[in-house]
Each structure stands twice: as structure tokens, then as C-alpha cells.
Length: 64
Image: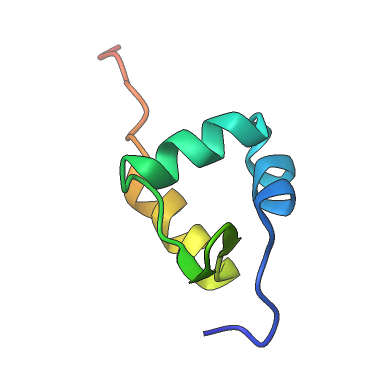
């Protein structure tokens, strides 16, 4: 785990998504997060990078 955890806003900025989208992803358990207390969410940057790697799709190539 990284020494510094990210806030919802920082993750939203990093992923170029709205804060509300991050909250929905948390609620659906689609993104790794830490719930420190009621209303306090944090994200491990290493886990977010790993999450992105797992979401990668191979590029389509056409024969030619």
C-alpha cells in the first residue's frame, strides 16, 4: 500500500470521471477503496493502477 491515499476527487480527476461516478462505482463495489469511517473514502494509488490494468482491452487488429 502506498504511503499516501487518494481522495474521491483525486481519483475522479485521475480517471477523468465525475465524483458522482466514483461514488456509484464504490457503492457497486466496482473500484477498490477503503472506508475509513462514515463518509470517509480513500483509495490506494497502487490498487487503482492495478484496477486499470485489469480493465485494459487488447487492441483490435485486422489482418492485412
